[in-house]
Image 1 (cartoon, rainbow, N blue to C red):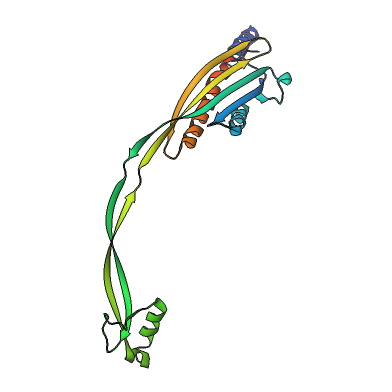
Image 2: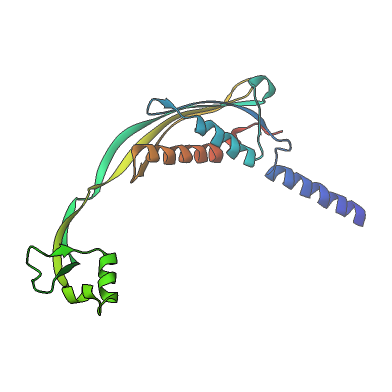
Length: 216
């Protein structure tokens, strides 16, 4: 009696497990991918999609004859618009610069005999205070304040649309078909916005397409 109850429980558990994970074998799929990014073929899209499906347990086939399903993606990225996120700004700042001059002992820093000294000359003069050089020359440090203007360029947000036509079919019929228009933005360029839109397209495929396969 206890054994019969256990077997009945095991049968019910197996039925529930099958209902939750009905697809026992890994689906075999062939990917047909044609994704254009501003007129250029985006080869990375197909590779990223295949890797993502492998992580989900799909087996990627090299030809349609070996596959149970064919996943077709026709997509194109197009520039939409760019919006100003930060206007151009100009501001001034003050910078202090010390000018080192070595002059004759009998002249002033404003005389024609004054000359700019590099750090080597300055060090030589400091270390030779008791030498003939120090008796003939003296060091003058003049503080100069420089005012400079700086401009921050205008900043943009670039928006791109990814128009995608996604189809999943088996040997007999089309199981899923839909058209998507995915909009994304990026602060650097239209190209970067297109990369984000491609990533979202792949995520949407992973969220929708696996649920459309036939259960085995």
